[in-house]
Image 1 (cartoon, chains in turn blue, yellow):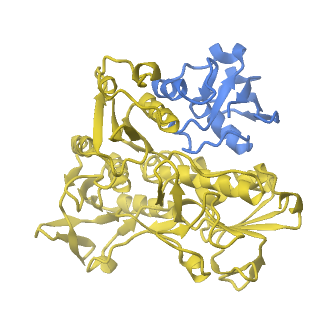
Image 2 (cartoon, chains in turn orange, purple):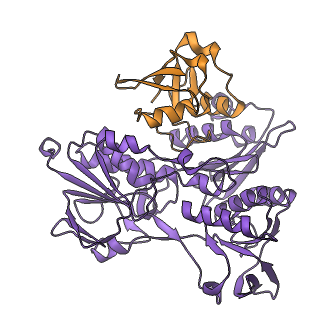
Image 3 (cartoon, each protein chain N blue to C red):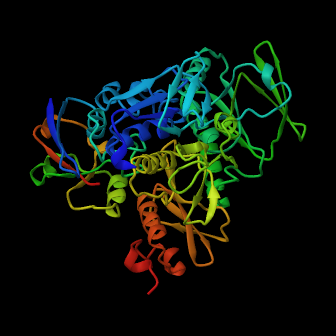
Length: 102
Length: 418
């Protein structure tokens, strides 16, 4: 089980738990504002963009090529950017804080 | 009127797919304090449509995986979702709708998100065809899957070589069907892309064992003992156990039309998604709207338009400033190929193909009218897609020679004209 904290652009904090699925699915389930997930999770739209807290970056599996390409020119992209639809929930994410990018 | 909206006000939304559902949630986000009544004739919890012809049809994951929002999310946001509720009329003067079950509901604001339905062309014999389906709803996908499972020979004929037809072909091929695509025009995707992309998809499907036949105008279907014989204008005919029709859509505008709203290739709306009636908005596939980038009225069939118009309408209803001026975007997944499109390429004069070096197939097509970039089609090339969208937003002029040179790295500093 991983407990993940989302902080939205208007500073709402939502804590959610899951042991499977994607981080995007968890965010949608909990109606996290700013995680629109328009394409439904196929890495086509960049509307599930989050910034990962620095201390968790190296605990995550590396982004794939398509995700990296999507993020390079995405609005508000930083070195800590990820597309949450591509982040599979794992134990290693327990305690992770994510700032919603848009 | 924003300061006057109270909890006693009601916003009614007709249609609970991408547009309607997003409008409901966007209304809450924009601060709508009143009731939200969301109606849909369908019985399933609203789901993402694009996966239907892709992952869902090929059996990856159940519909639960593709819900737009969880049941809990509607409750939490106090959105009253009425499934299985067909709306039969809108009465703009009385500001109410009536339902097929005889009940009525008053509204302060009404949002039409009635979408579109698959167009079934009037081909002689089509009504009597055996195992003939369209591919628009979850029910369609479920029926196609079931029919294929039960079919012995699994000979599937797809009428229409557009995105729906091709995605369906790829998914059914994955499930072991013998698939033939009949396209009326001389190339696939004729309406929407440059020949280079049409040819790419033709080869892609052929390499996966799909028979692609162009210039095939279907004129008759004869069914006997569960087998269809499909005849084309050139005299050729094909045998099929199943037929999937993917030749476009028809807008669901009858309710709006009967209510006297302005219609012109869809429900005519303003930049704030308002119809010709002050308190009625329309969003998504059913609307005809002005696009400021392309300076013309358009109707779009895509998730982006549904979601973005939903947000604009919600803001307008809550008295906030917001106008619709988004660059359209689309995607299609077939086999292991991802196509991403940004912009609208119609009326292009020049289509420049940029092929990246390397083993993997990776290229992009840049559509121009004179110096103006209109659209980008990106094959396995998210970078070109995202960059294209950026250039479309900024309107920067590009150096076309550098753009098509694979030795020039694809980044703004290299491509934008000084």
